[in-house]
Image (cartoon, rainbow, N blue to C red; front, side):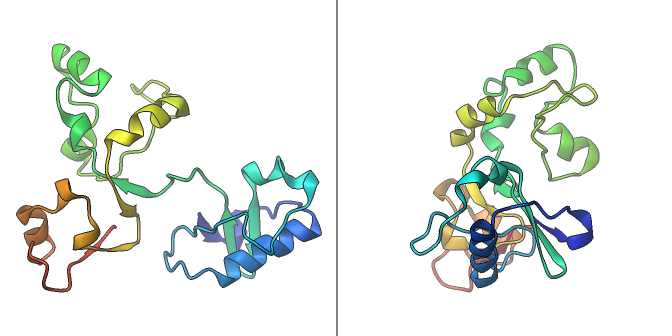
Amino acid sequence: EIKDAGECTHSTLGVETNATLVDLLSKSSDTNRYVRDIIFPTRGYSCTVDDTLALDDVELVIGSVCYKRVHPDHMSVYDFTYWTLEDTHPGNMVAAMEGEYNPIMKWMDLDNNVFLTYPSFPSGDVPNHSIGRWNTHSTKFPMLGRFGDTVLFVDLPNEIRLDEVAQHFGESSSIGGSGVVVCG
């Protein structure tokens, strides 16, 4: 995740690890302004052996920018239509029986908010969901891109390439046209 340098504390890393990460981040062609994906291990780069555990929670300040390591799905944009159906998400049927809002759709229905934050810790009436639960169920949701990415319409999953989606973004569902959809 990309933040202002003042929002982070530079992690103490070995010289080799620090040089590797700075070089990979600096040379990255990723243009997303919210997250930066880098691939490691990469030929020609290495880390200090003692830094293996430190990399789980690293914050690296380069100039005025902080790069914070986050979960690989952080800021990813998914289609959660599947989990809005009554018999898919474990809480949907319970919510319906109790006269409550659908636990997936309520964020949009009540707050007009398109962000669904994974509840990895309890808050309000939302119980804790372990990351293992995400790992088990995330394959049911087509990934559309990352927040801030520009995605070509033709690169969207088939179930999303609908006429209604194309029209919403001012495109045609045919192969022609610019076919650009922006996540965020």
